[in-house]
Image (cartoon, rainbow, N blue to C red; front, side, top):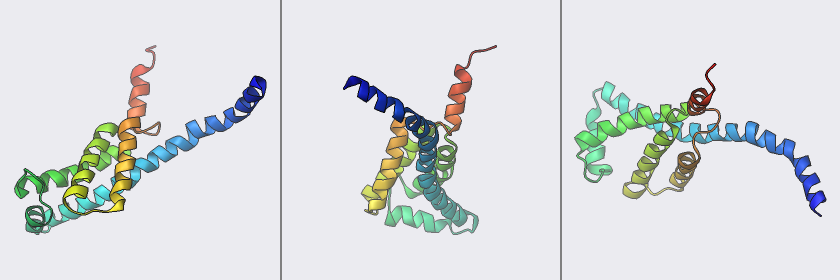
Length: 154
């Protein structure tokens, strides 16, 4: 029985390699790009309000529609806008991937618990939590930095 299991294992090994070094990195990249695009688009919309002299709309939203507990709108609106522009870029690149995922996960939880209840937020949360726990994957700047810093100096 043990030799049969060993043969099956050896037959599955090439598939395991394809999954580990081919499919998994692409899936990790997709996990990063989807929430990054959602948050970045939101940040761009907020930034457009700033550029178009309609920033008062954002201040109203953060004061009346979805206030952030403990923060006045004059602080919450620009901090959120900055986070929605910077963290998605970091996440998409996989640079400080866990930090970016953690920040966006906190934002997702704030959105879910203070403003809109949506099953979409569960998907964002699950993807971001996976990145926070596992890291951004092999197709990331973080992975390149780890490889570069751990390579033997020659």
